[in-house]
Image (cartoon, rainbow, N blue to C red):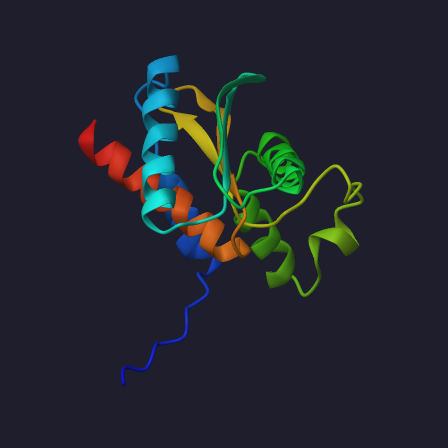
Length: 161
C-alpha cells in the first residue's frame, strides 16, 4: 500500500513566482481557444467535474462545462474572475495574502462575497509589456486543485510557445 503525501500549500512567495513566470508574449482569440481546449483535455483525463472560462478585456473568449459541473460553477467563475480583475493577481494568491495577515478576504476586503471570491482557480492572463489583460478560470474542484489545474495548463501552453 502506498501512502499519499499531504499536499503542500504554496506560500505567497511561491504563488507570486508563478505569476512572474507565467507571462504571454501576446494573447489572441486563437490562444484562448488553444488554452481552453488544453484545460478541457486535462480535466477530461482526470474526469474532473469542472467549468472552464477564459475572458480577455471584458469578453468571454472560451467557456466549457464538463459533465458533473453545475450552474454554481459558473457563479464561482464570475466571482473568482472579478478578484483577478480587481487585484491583478490570481484569486488563490489574493486569498493567501489575506490569510498571511491573519485574516480572511471575506472579513477584511470590504467587498461583497456574493460578487467576489478569493478562492483558487482564476489566474491572470498577463502579456509582456502590457500587464493583466484577462483571466483563465476553473471551478469545480477544491480551490487548490482548481488553481493547480490552471497553472499546469499555463505551464504546458507557455512551454510550447
